[in-house]
Structure formats: C-alpha cells, structure tokens
Length: 133
Image (cartoon, rainbow, N blue to C red; front, side):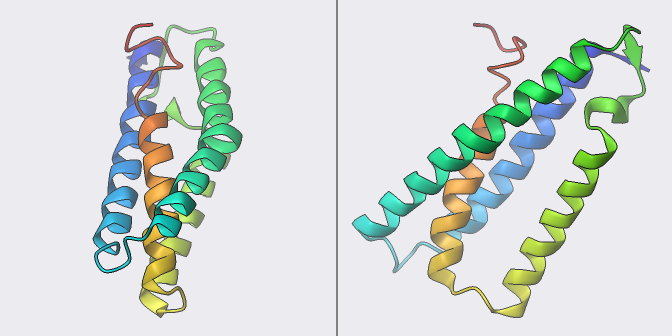
C-alpha cells in the first residue's frame, strides 16, 4: 500500500518512461528524413496529443487518485483498468505496426517523435503538483 502522492509519482514515471521510449524510437528514424516539413509535422503531432489527449489524461488520473477516500492504495492503482487496457493495445499496435513494416520510417520518425515528446511532457508531473508550481 502506498500514499496517493506515490501513486501520482508512479503515473508520472510510467508516462515519462513510455514517452522517452517512443521519442527515442522516433528520433532513431529521423536521420536522412530531417526536413522542415517533417519537423513541423512532428510539432503538430506533439501539440495535438499534448492538448487534446495527454493534458486531459493527466487531469483525469490526478483527480481520480486524489479523490480516493483512503490515503493508501495498492501501488497499481496509479492507473485504472481501462487505462491499463488502452496502454496494452497501444503498445501492441505500435510494436505490430513497426514489425510489420506497414508504416514507412518517415511516418515513424514524425509521428513517434511528436507523440513521444507529448507523453514525456505529460510525465513531467507538472499538472499533479508533485514537481512544484
């Protein structure tokens, strides 16, 4: 059993670790594809995911965790069941997409860089209050 603040920290660490790994994959595909258009597209992907997905996700999980009546919860309660399912589907889909070769390396570079950077930022804990104002 861990405190609510620890659950928030665990959520941040999971988001940051996933974001770092996705960003790493995207950047590894960028050599030879670094154009102004690709960089701008990565920024667009970043902004869409930051604004419309991950900011809302962080707020939702923070409110859920802080809303627990008990101060201590099981350590896996940093996510709820639907979030674990979504994470599993996204990981399986991303691995399958890269392994199948269906997505060109340019797409992986642009999309994964934007997505990974947005997820890494979500893991910065800025909206949870754990990392200061």
